[in-house]
Image (cartoon, rainbow, N blue to C red):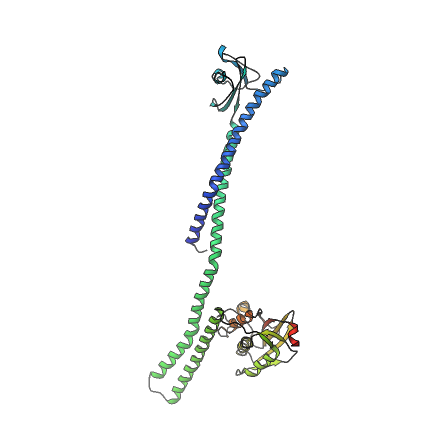
Length: 393
């Protein structure tokens, strides 16, 4: 996996922004939980005092623990029920002699909360309660909201990292495709140019017979034709990619077009036939579809002795089959034969004919497919949207 510093920087910035937004919210939630934990401790102490007053009024013996009654003026204090600590009762009780309540935190063999209340006649009730559970609750809240803030900011960073990668993927793919396109185009043109250079250099190396010059010129002519064809395909593909090939739609009989191509294409060593069938009419651009069928037929004839063109209707599509008796496609390349500069077999050219054909068909809302025939050879199929009412026009 390639390291991408820009994606990492974007993820880091997103994490910091998320933390800046979530951090204060998490701290506020933690502060609220801490207040609630302290409030719970206070309410427990308050409940002990209330239970003690109720017990006095009802004269019951069921008294809460860690409660004392004190008369600070007389320096008198005593426990009301069972106790398990000994606070400085008079010191904690004396400040409420004027009335009201005092809540105070203090430490004595641990952390405690003391609540003192003036109940009249110079009497104060005091209770203390341990703050161990309060400390646990606050610690858990601190860890929880810290984890929430860090997890949320990390998630924001991960999402940003993936989003930036996803947004950049088409750009990177386009960059890679263009780079490969230039490299493949240069490779495709380099071979005929090398032949031209070699033939010309060989012819000019010394004086030769007229027949030898003729052979060199024939090699140069063949190489220039190949280079010209490659340049033509490159220009055609660039025009298609730029969206400059807008189809001129009109009713088109594919069966007649197939017969026309079969009669017009001449490839040495190959026989091209069209199987006549029912009328198959589509809405399409004659010139573009003619070029599609012509490209596919020539591509098949280049590696076969017999090519058959068949038209039919199938599941809402008009279908053109170009079958040949050649060696077929390399099994590992069948899925790539319509990609530019991909070879369908080891002997085929590395041109753009099939890629251009696919693009033209897709302009009409159709698609192309390729497969190897069970009886041998290759089969390329073009499907175009079919409208039954066209046949009646």
